Image (tube, rainbow over all chains, first blue to last red; front, side, top):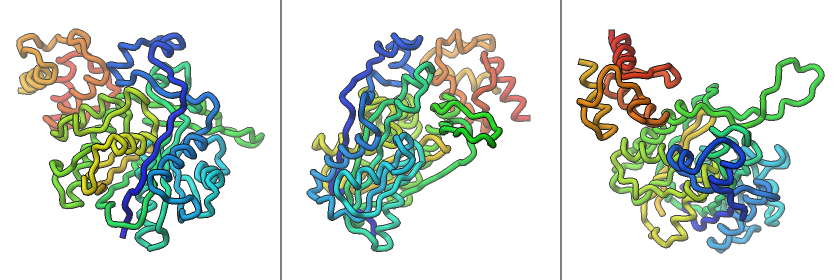
Length: 317
Length: 73
């Protein structure tokens, strides 16, 4: 027993920041960002927290599913940019929705949503839950160094969510961690203990671009092949590939290496940038709402990022 | 011959003629950005069964050939 997805939702803040807007803050250009990253604009929150975004995406997904908040048995949110470590993003959503089920966050950076799906699959396998709400939500603008032109042009804010019911449509999965890497690092607040002697680090996203690119492409190609094979399928059986929207160049190179036409990849990075744990559920919601998905279609989800971490899964629609 | 293989792979990746590439050709001459460079290094890794560190200074085709030769020995 695993689950089936019975509703998807997403939400992005209203405020649009274009590449030209960024060029007025840091030394960059629309041409550079478009070529190196593939982002044209991103949404940046002016007053909503990651939890606010999560709540609105959740309402959207619940509405499609027809599930009432009080029917939920589990809420998991994947986020690295909540306003408070405690209460959690999921706890905030639970309270705003008026749900009473257990709710908790998990952190696996950009792979967080796929890790959360796998955690949820464990609850279903034990027969503990019927209806679950799984969210990826980020206000990455909070942890971006807006003076660092190599990172601030990449990221955006947003949230995506799915509502699941007991079923057998989570066909295979892989979650993978390569711990201890400093290729991507987001130091947290180091505190003000008078006893702690280590110097604190600046609490913003730091990324080694080339190493990240290499890890991402390798992870995506290997993970996708592995979950397809675990589900006894071939790459040709997959209708859509839904990758983490990290950088258009990563998606293009992985598509080439996998020998899969680029038009089978759901891409929206040009509009939203890299929204970390929110990107896969946002793209899933986009393809679902576009009307191009039919029951029975096979989807391959793939994410990779800080940790280093990566994950993939095959879902039957 | 490592040089020939590197030239062939670069020419294919960048959609140009092999004769335009020599040992002295630099990445800058080829007009490629840092991500093209990683893509090419990753393809070379596969071709030669070696591993590159992405931050090592390899600026020309000759640098690549030298590095690959040292790894293959």
